[in-house]
Image 1 (cartoon, rainbow, N blue to C red):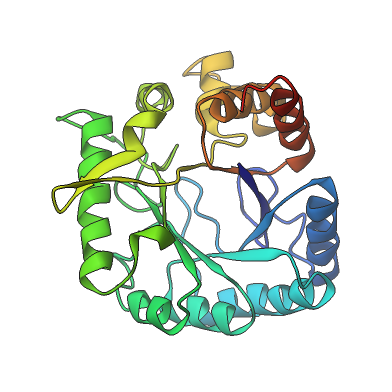
Image 2 (cartoon, rainbow, N blue to C red):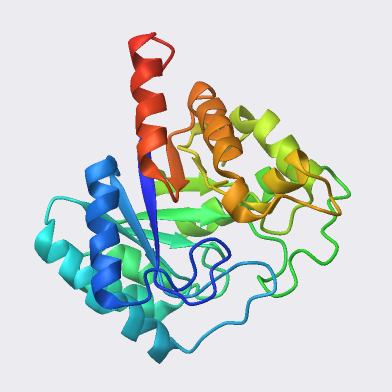
Length: 277
């Protein structure tokens, strides 16, 4: 299992907005994430919290590209993921050394990103499921055919899009999108059925795919531990996050995307010693 360490270069992210907006603070946080055991630094310049507004391409570029270049300069062996769905941001990020594209729209917003994946044949792509857009995704999410089935069908369609455009399935990572257009119960159903997403039938062939889960500090944890009406605030979701990430390790999740790397690395080390993973 590998750990994505989250580096939000934003002013309005739900958990750490503004903390790493400054260039020097962002680079220091990348260093901390790496020291704590991150395998990948996931760098994003636009908040995608519920209700958030998009920013311009120019603003996003000014936030992420200098940090990507500096992190890659100081830590040339660390993998960098660009958390963006915009073609020009992804293009410049890959030019600057990023090796993973983490796209919340799964190439629906910028399908031409597929051409960048051809240009950079060693780049992996994270296809995330999201119902709606960050601005409206939590207004009234519904899945008439069941959240697990609908996400699986979404993945199949997106995978076929990539395969039809010449992208090898081995480069694809699937993220069911915890908290992106889901109620608390939808998120619970996803976590209870993680293994359902691992093996999908693509062109009548059963194929295995690595799974990424990003649940760190998210509101459904606060709603379960508090209530739907009065959820615990993000700063009080730390222990719940650790517990659910440990559950994901036991479920053989391939990647975890987290704000706090150290406790996940420790949980993984302990479970490896117990031969549980």
